Each structure stands twice: as C-alpha cells, then as structure tokens.
Amino acid sequence: QVQLVESGGGLVQPGGSLRLSCVTSGFIFRGNSMNWFRQPPGKQLELVATISSGGFTTYVDSVEGRFTISRDNGKSTVYLQMNSLKPEDTAVYYCNAPNVPSAAQFGSWGQGTQVTVST
Image 1 (cartoon, one colour):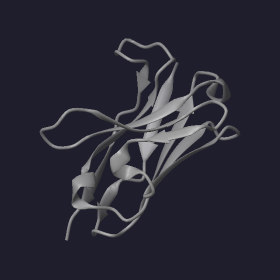
Image 2: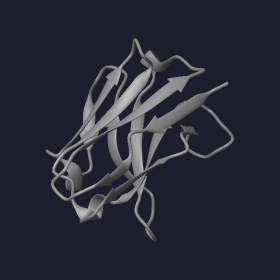
Image 3: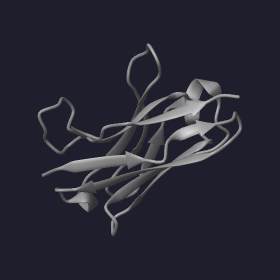
Image 4: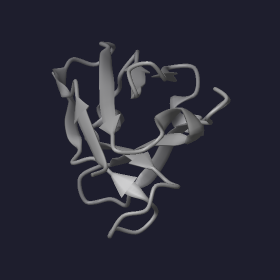
C-alpha cells in the first residue's frame, strides 16, 4: 500500500523557517521523482519544487533561493526546507509522487500539512 505522510507544518512569523518532511512507503522511492505542491486559501494548486531520482531540482520562481527540496533515499523521505517565509507562502503543502499510480490524478499524494505565515 502506497503511503505519503507529511509533517512539519505550523504557524511561523514572517522571516521564519520550517522544514517539511514526507515519509513514503509502498513503492521504490529511490527510482521516483518527487514533488511538493501547495494550495493557498481560495487558490489553485501550485507546483512548488521537484527533485528527480538523480537529485536534480527545480523550483517555482516565487520560492527560488528561499526553499530547498532534498531527499534521503535510505529513509524514503523527501524534505522541503523553507526559509525567509512570507505571508503569501501560507498554504496547505502536499507531497506528490507523480509516477506512482493511485486512484487520484497525477500520481500519489499525501494528506497535506498546513503552513501559516503570520504575525
């Protein structure tokens, strides 16, 4: 059974940092690219960052230089280090394995973790 479980969200002040984790199981993690998406309140889902099976990374422009995606194949876990957080980073963040089939569209998904950036 495929599982993706996010953690690490919470309330943080502007300029602060959070580290999200997504622990996976049920598929060959090391052979798969992984994504972090986010959905701000009332807005559409947005791809934030991608890491390939070989460790190549890409980011949406709005987080370039502030966020870092990484992976630990030994722990089947993908991370999103978020620094210099802004109120506009407030969203539910989802971990996604785009090439791992599920009943959902676009691969397999975690349940999401809320990130709120506010004073």
